[in-house]
Image (cartoon, rainbow, N blue to C red; front, side, top):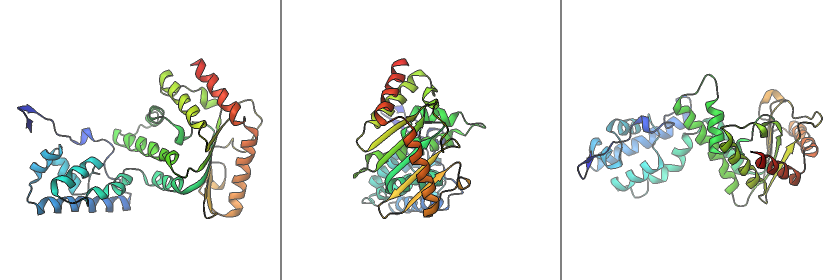
Length: 291
């Protein structure tokens, strides 16, 4: 393809990491296959050849065929451009929300959906900064540190999925969110000094939000119920709740009142033992001044 005599490189799979379909995600496979079929039918209905359509949307012909056959997840901007080119009247653009969800792993998608409905969220983290508070640099550094390493596609998908959960802070009305973080991970300069400074700044910014409390558990504190690992509690408007703790119920999510009472007791005990919110923010400010 050329524009004003200059060659334009069309996007290929190498330019689109993290947008392949997870074959184990039945719902995701069905969504992408349906969208791909609609794209192909619309293109054929207007008599546009794949190679011409590919050039118009800025993709290689092979990528267009993979998207239409349900093997690749189309980006939102791809659907918008296709809607415009094929005169779909907004029908293709309307598929963006479901299509973008498919990119995220099933477990993360389910967690994000619950967090989006919760009126109260409680999170205790023992070893890392909670995912809801991680910067993009922090997320990427953690995921790329895994052994054996993830593929570039998997890294991109996991980074995008974790960051997408942070839209919970934009909800209106806002949920009440309570974080307790151990002091030890706040000293680990994940991603380097500059990235870690940005991470501390984010903790301060979010910790000052009206609907958020952030507490630090001092390393010199006594033993408490969270030393076995992460705890998360989500409470909903209808009075139901779901929770999970690394050190209880084999780490599985639970929703029975008796089990939830135990997790609620644990989280309350941890919050009572941690530094108060104001002192916690002052502690993080001190760390930031030392970076």
